[in-house]
Amino acid sequence: MELHILEHSLKVASIAKEGIQICTHGLIKLAFLPSKTRCKFFSLTETPEDYTIIVDEDGFKELPESEYLSVADATWLALNVVSGGGNAASSQPIGVTKIAKSVIAPLADHNISVFMLSTYQTDFILVRERDLPMVMHTLSSEFTLLRVVNGETVAANSTGVTNGFVKPKLVPRPVIHPLSSPSNMFCVTSLDPDTLPSVATLLMDVMFYSGGAKETGGQSEDSGHIRFFSFSLIEGYISLVMDEQTTRRFPNNVLFTSASGELWKMVRIGGQPLGFDECGIVAQISEPLATADIPAYYISTFKFDHALVPEENIQSVIGALRTNESTGQ
Image 1: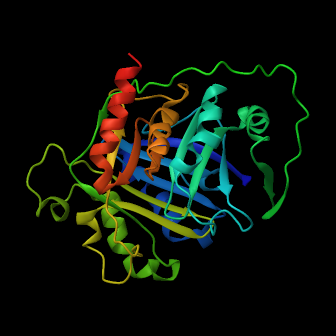
Image 2 (image 1 turned 45 degrees about the horizontal axis):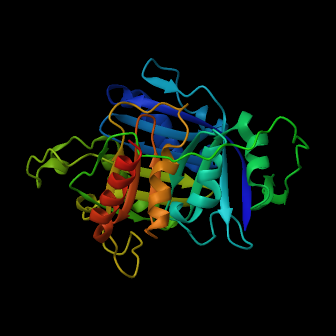
């Protein structure tokens, strides 16, 4: 298989809920008017705590400096596993569990922190730019490493650095963070970019006015129900993650659906904000799922991580993770 190192230099940032109106103009431009920017990689995820943004350097220029904007102290690069030829966005999705043992676990073994973004189309593994030599060394035996330069895929130049890399001591990876599973069910979907203008007003309402009466009117007060919405526009491809109730607000035949109409349940990882320096969090979750052959989407945010698994698998997932949790104690 091929591992593509994409050309985007990425920033990961958090916008506080009370400061979202300051950034709304730039975010609308990035999401709905991409021709007005040079941005090629943009993702916005709302959680109960904040908004997480992943954006390339051109897109980051659209955001104002603000006390409500916190930026992770690193430049990140996106990696993408591609089965066979073709570009990253048009490749078949293989799921984070399919790359758990070949990518996620080896990086964790080498103490390389990753930030995950699963989309409708594919999975992006974000690593710090400064970690790239170690990433390439770690994965070169398993993958053909290719780098995207000016839109063209070329062989990645070996850094030639081998000295100083110590073979890691493999240790068990128990689940060490609290897990929770919200009551709502989620859809992972997409839409044709040509239809985006027809639902732009609705999407803006969902993105920025989620606390309004429209969202809550049909729902009872449920402490297990959380707010989670993710929009990505990456190299022209749109991905959406939203709960089932939100999908009902869209016109028929706008959102893509799988043949099975699959619904997903969430496992939320973290009791306190996780930070960016701890290694192995994604591996703690994805390895047991891979062993059980359960597909999953995985979305890291500024404070917590989120795995989405098929609705029918949620109990076995929680059981497997709880077992992994208890065996590590």
